[in-house]
Length: 293
Ligand SMILES: Cc1cc2nc3c(=O)[nH]c(=O)nc-3n(C[C@H](O)[C@H](O)[C@H](O)COP(=O)(O)OP(=O)(O)OC[C@H]3O[C@@H](n4cnc5c(N)ncnc54)[C@H](O)[C@@H]3O)c2cc1C
Image 1 (tube, rainbow, N blue to C red):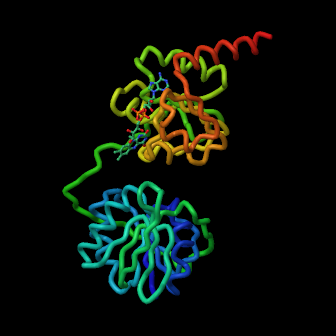
Image 2 (tube, rainbow, N blue to C red):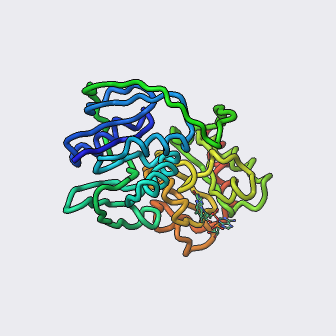
Image 3 (tube, rainbow, N blue to C red):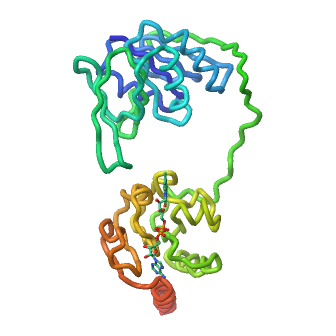
């Protein structure tokens, strides 16, 4: 079997690990030199436009049994376009792959509450969720450098780093707030509590995306940040699965909700039925008292 890997340089060593049991011959295309033990590594410079990569891979893809890419945003755009162009089946976000009279791929469904197994004929195009893979490093058999000439209808105008106000992935304690908060001004008591606890403030998506009370980088969940603090204090949060997947790796979850049947109870170590407008001021008072003594 022969596999072609197309990946950004950072993910390539993990993508190699995901593919090494599938194929005897593995080739890779990326745009910066990385030490991965493939037969041949092509380092192709000259473009960051997905459109161009689709055309480039169209010329490269012939005679491979698998074309594998990491399940990144860019690859998830390139892979299906390439599959259509080649007339090949496409599976997205597989987290494990196995040969079995074709290719067996497993992937998450319902935001991680279930898994499904899919079987496809070979050749196939697949994007792989690399979370569970360790990177493999080693000397490539050969390295070729190339400069791609591409005239796409799309051009890159500008790329710049956005200065994030916080990196929630590193926070040890998080005070997270949901729509139980009645108005933006009440964030001040949440910030005061967070400061007393040495915590970062996070939120559910409605507070950042809809109400714009907090910046996007503070929203936790499926479309937001995945956090793993020691303590996740969830205030006025119902516990919809799209939010819960973002703090599943927290050590201890404490939640406060007026609704005794709120779904967040099921994923909490401590569930307090109560009004956050009573709970937060009392906790602030107690923490101040403790600090004062
Ligand atoms: C495709 C898609 C992706 C999504 N991605 C995300 C995501 O990444 N992150 C995310 O957070 N959401 C996401 N959502 C939205 C998600 O489905 C929920 O709508 C959202 O998480 C609910 O936010 P909430 O818990 O703040 O609000 P609500 O569901 O309205 O819950 C508010 C809770 O506050 C309680 N409450 C009210 N007043 C008080 C009070 N005074 N004291 C204590 N408790 C009180 C209520 O009982 C209720 O349980 C996504 C949705 C979709 C469709």
